[in-house]
Each structure stands twice: as structure tokens, then as C-alpha cells.
Image 1 (cartoon, helix red, strand yellow):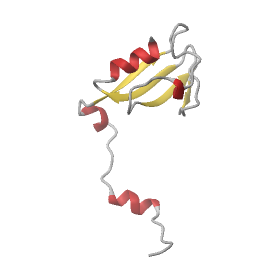
Image 2 (cartoon, rainbow, N blue to C red; image 1 turned 90 degrees about the vertical axis):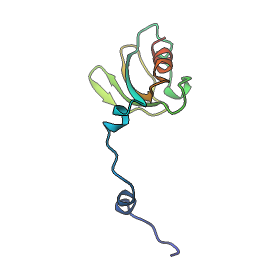
Image 3 (cartoon, rainbow, N blue to C red; image 1 turned 180 degrees about the vertical axis):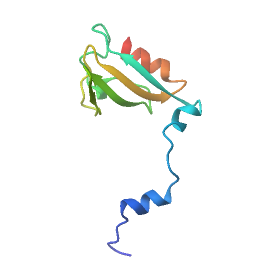
Image 4 (tube, helix red, strand yellow; image 1 turned 45 degrees about the vertical axis):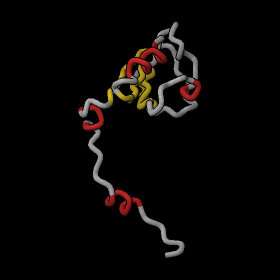
Length: 100
């Protein structure tokens, strides 16, 4: 049908539900928590400027108790606590980029 748009419900019903715990319980991915130190290479850099491994997702930045859902232009600061989702094999590289 020309001009027909599917609503959000139609898209949701066509895919199996996502279990957030299954993302990490399979052993293929890890959620990594990193504190940004003053000496961290990531301090005062935008997320999009970091050399993160492919398929890494920065989930949350906790800045002095305020939770920020980051975008590429979010600048990481000294004292930030970052949660990232990465493949299990790439998790150490994520830690090096953010904490190094």
C-alpha cells in the first residue's frame, strides 16, 4: 500500500521481546563500569572522539549523582562514572580507552 506507515505496536509485535539481562547473561557481552580519573585519556573528551572498539555502547554517565543518557557529543569529565556495554572480548579495550 502506498503511503502506509506501520505504527510502533506493529513493529514491536513482529520481533521477539528483548530481555535486558540476557544481553549479559549469555557471556558474549559485559557491562563495564569505569571511573574517569583526572589522568584518564578520556577526561574532557567527547564520546565520539574516543577510539572505542566497534559495537561498544556507552549506556550511562553518572555525574555527581545525576544520570546522563549520553550521546556522541557528551564530554566525559573527571569524576564521571561510566557504564558501557561491550563484547566480552572487547571489554578490556574499553577499560583501557576510558580509564587509561
